[in-house]
Length: 499
Image (tube, rainbow, N blue to C red; front, side, top):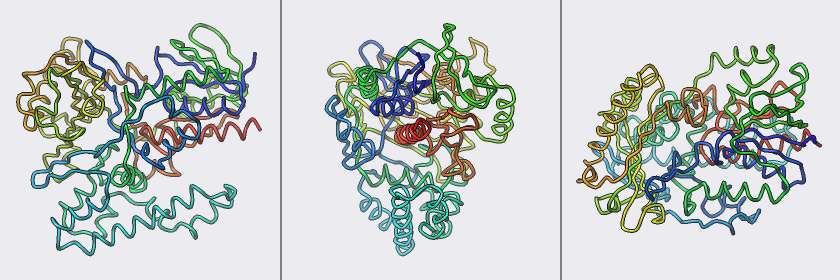
């Protein structure tokens, strides 16, 4: 049998793409190397505690959000339970402590009160960003042909173009002189993986609207519940789904057109189109069977920057974290307003001073912990090189030492935390690489620099006819929301190809 499409990997992008193709009557086969779907966005259980492996918060699940609308239109929303979030996070700096509650006006009021000398500039910034959002929405919703739309962008969307060319720091420095104000505006950088001095303003603004202005929700039982529903719906639509099945080769006709995939079990599966949700680097420099094309992509990727990885300490607690003082589902803590310094602490592995965050999923969904208990995840960004060359014993010792160091830092906000820990697991960049095969455990795909964001990011199409990409390494970027959109974009390209 020859399938219309073979999808490699069941991360968010792969699942959404496969689901869309199956819904439109295409024959689909999906192969996943792991035993469960979701990629980074899965869950695991320890002694009755359920932990999100990587997802902290997903934007656009609120009313009129992209993902919410999709779930409603497809009927998937009837198969899961959404829990509405009241706020995003508590954000703490040496001299400022505030809560982001999805209400932009509250954030604006906070800034006006604490930076009265910058009030006019604060208003000017939001007027400028509103123009960007209006033009971006116009671009996304346009029904013009792609070629005509690209020609008209400079005239219809000048703010769209301008923002695409600058960093977060460059943008805000045009308006503000107060470095602390610039730091608070750029706080979301840690969700995106680069300091404001290097982070694309284009990608930053998309995330900023999602978390600072629009309410969102959480999937009861963990986001894997949604992915399991997607798998069941795929099967109901006639798709074939293989777990514990890795793809070891993309078979082509001399690198010009896809023929199919070869699995680790030696099976050849023929397909007219192939969509890879595996990381783009492995897909195009390892899985492809044509040496010439592999070398071309290897040369292209050699100048591209991969994102950071991270360390996560998962804690099962004898009491809810709220009892210790965790008043919001998330807490972000920065020891300095200098985000370049924050980033340097990450690079050199300074776990005493680097930015860290805490996430209390069980505060949103009590079913994630046994009755009367709670979960807590502490995270810091990190680099694979800080863990790469350790022996097994050195690795084990460092994991425990860093976990204890982060727990002590967390106790500044949650006194007595170390005394109520019942379960502890630690994940490092090596863990991220092992479970997802992402190069160096990169959690955001390619780093969201100006030259690697927006239209500059890797597209869904490739040099090989019939081979498409989806996921965090491609447009529009990383995160569940972006990967969801990437899956839809890949599905559209495949439908065009299949006619």
